[in-house]
Length: 114
Image 1 (cartoon, helix red, strand yellow):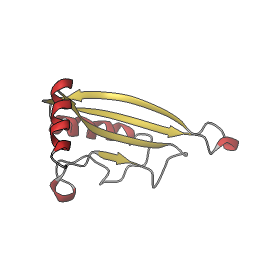
Image 2 (tube, rainbow, N blue to C red):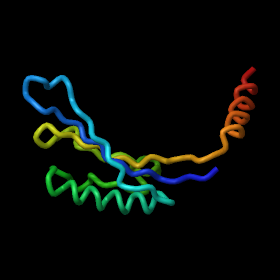
Image 3 (tube, helix red, strand yellow):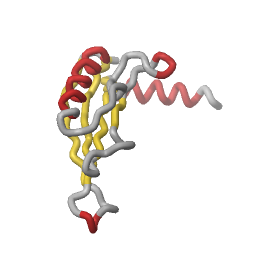
């Protein structure tokens, strides 16, 4: 199985005051990286760019070791949106594998329950 790391930023916002219950989304892909370290480095560069328009706290950064030594894969401003705009910067692991092989493994694993 081959893995990559996908770095995206999702923006959520409303376009007018009377329609605050409906929001729009815009998701952009920053890049696909071979390692989590590369994705974190580039993700933190993107956070620096976001800080030009958004409030960004010092701990609003991706990191390799966060809770229980797992990487911090999500950075967001949901607690303090700027002009009602929220962003979600996210690193997602992409797993590339053979479909037939994956199905066989899943069926093997579920048959062990019985």
